[in-house]
Length: 389
Image (cartoon, rainbow, N blue to C red; front, side, top):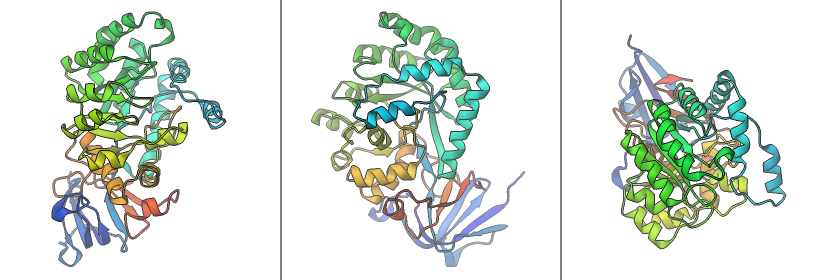
């Protein structure tokens, strides 16, 4: 059944991300947008707007593509608020708390995990996130990794197998055996529910040799490559990701000149996660350095119960502008088109004919207000697949 046509008009500022005229945001003033069957069918001056079955008056506000959050860990159980409080009191972040969440997640029922994902997904949608990637990584055994991905797949098409998050306690003295499990039975059980494979390539997690072996097995199973890299210190992760053709390397906090050059010479996206630095009191990535080198940059929340328990892309946009030397336009692009590039999606992150009609109407006249008014609930209305939410 056709949904009919919907016109969003009286748009003061329309961010299309069409990249024309030297403006990456493709801003159009006094604009309108026509939606048909869940897709953008037309954009142009409001005075030339075609007739439609229904109409939304934007009231002179800004309209943006829905945010694309390309890095999130939503399938978990338990609470790590005490760990956050300890960090705020001066304890250093090491990633060790992941095992706490593993225990709680294994003990949780499917319904409990599904309720958590549903709650966070709804929270994200209210804040303008219309596309989200969801990782496993808190099961770390065959059964719980597979069920985590099966549940995640109920909420998104972009699911990521992260069996190589950390080595679980029962394999602490046998990391090679755990890598064999990840590459063998765990991958076989998880792959039917996953689009991507990811590894936490970091000290205390997986070294370059183990990461390479796991990612190669994932590629052989038909999964695309993503990588946690260079969060806690310099390391081999970024260059390994580029070598393997990863869609995205994520965190990118500690980079050498060779890392930046490798990213600049590739189509691998550097996904920055400022919520993690905020929550761990760690140094922020130098987005300016990456952008000036010509690297494609995305922003994502890294929503997880330990190191970045935020679901807010507007918050991450504001952090990127304030703490990572991005302009507001660069941050908005990174949170929309950049996220789409990190997921190798061409149907989202833009508002041009043929794109999925995912958009947000701000309670503000310009995208600048996302950074100018941090912490203020500026998302007036969200349309997902052309349907008001």
